[in-house]
Length: 316
Image 1 (tube, rainbow, N blue to C red):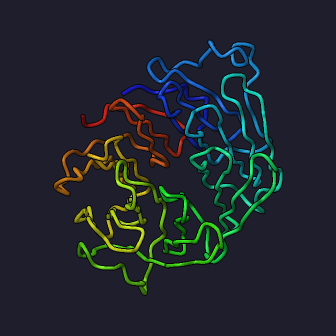
Image 2 (cartoon, rainbow, N blue to C red):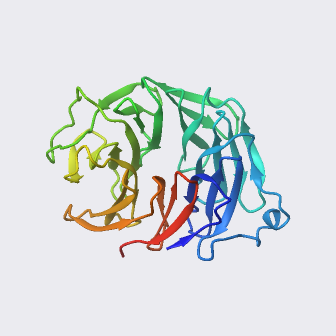
């Protein structure tokens, strides 16, 4: 394990697609690029060497890289989005009124020409980088939207919300095609029903190397792999209902492992092949707020409620 300087209060983190950079977004609005091996700022980037960091007026709640790693998007607590060129730190596009409230997640389209965002304002929006305009809005959630993603074929958008649902949207028409409520225990191969009592859905992300499956994390001691048609293919459970809830997930690059962080500050590692819990690691005393996996090495980066970033060796 290694830790980053404690004066840097992180609220979001991400790795670049090539694994070269670890980027943090802080409560003071600064965006900084780190060498994840040394825990030091990348001073080979001229703008950081000259103390000209990328920044926004409010705290950074979300970060995302384009597929080619050239662009970095940042979303602020005040609902603004900026898009940067990572090599020179220049802002190439601003969305000053992307949302009415904080931007909770960001996701580039595969081409890098569009940007998907979610917000505390209960909406999912699609932004055009060329036009600088909001192209589409996916509206229907009744609470915060925490995460969203494109399907591999770019025909659908999936979103996870604190209203306890995952919604599947038609990318072009913005029509809601399906509303799912994946909660505690679901039998594999069975469609997910709507639940009477729902826990917040915190994350939805694609399963590596599988085109039509996603990993969904409710605020429960359970994580599910499901198809975009709503069928659960695997569930990963802890027998700690009422004691521990998961607050975030990360998937290994090959999809062999799913990592979940709990409200007990433990990291739980599940083998996707068997569904078994293969490892548990205590990540400290402060609650863990976020977790990302390095794209090529067995390294996990986590940040906690105290704003500290730590790196851990993942199961290989």
